[in-house]
Length: 119
Image (cartoon, rainbow, N blue to C red; front, side, top):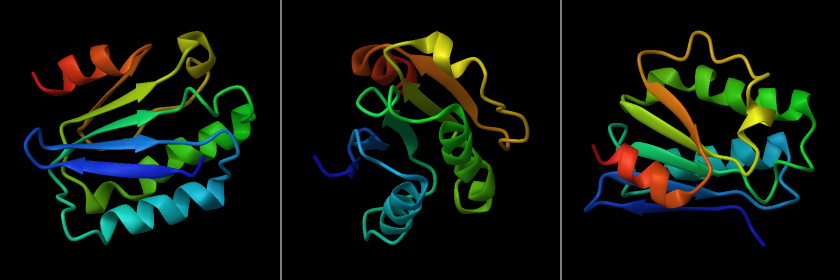
């Protein structure tokens, strides 16, 4: 499966679906495509689904991907970013400091993340 994103203009949300073989470089490319997409809006909330890749990423790779959030904070103005993991405890070791003013939460399902992002 390929890494992908979908922009839902009605809900003002960007959905990212990450494949099991994603690398940090792949994620950077995905973010670049996302930022340059004609429907991209820097105010849209984000839902990133890490469930397919969470068990194959090292903690360092996962931290690198989260650092991309930090590095791109000037390009975004969203209020919420939802990260979906099957095992939320795996995410507790990640450093989320200095992520702008956006709120980031970890969820187990798309439904929970979407409900939160739409509030």
